[in-house]
Image (spheres, rainbow, N blue to C red):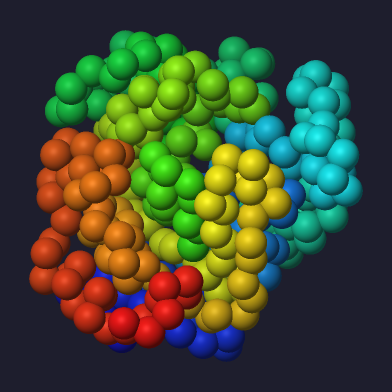
Length: 307
């Protein structure tokens, strides 16, 4: 079904990936940013397989180190070590454990780790990145311009697909969808600086990293609740959220602001009351009201129950 600028497919049949991808009109090369935030809440190999199989032409999967993508986090033993050598071992383990490694090999697609590119100083010239994003106000933390891998700038003019999870969070985030997914392009694992004390910088920095990559790419979004969708009502639940399975929901739009606002209203939240969504609308253009209203009236949701 379609809600104006937003398309929604609901099925466990793999055909849905092709249906949604076809609506996005992706221009290659396509950079796919999944959500591998924690070991208990990540874009599954089967979902990535479906998306990669639906995208023709040159593709690249990109992510940075996460803070709980580890065996320790899986076993309830904390979040694991953040030493560089341990992060590398944990990521190697994650790619095998999750099945993602096999999917990447199947499709012949490279995985680029943003953090490793920054550590290796394989980054683009900051002034060039700044010029690419100069249609937007300057970012709060200028080092964001300095931490874009040269490999990504070389693909400028292509499409950046934010392949987000259907995930409800505690306030002030409320929802971690296609806009918030780009926060993971800030080289991790630690991003406390960009939250600020009491999350005072969070809305701005979410929008700022979107500015950077919108300057380089045509950014489009998908929200995946096919195999799992999750909700974490408190910060403590961030590592081990409540998860519902096999809802078969996949949404997509060329307009990430409208896409995220639509999901928020489907779950009975006003996007105007979510700081980073409101700021994104102010910065990139407001969500399409007709699309958002239609999504709300559809009665489709995961966690809110029947209207």
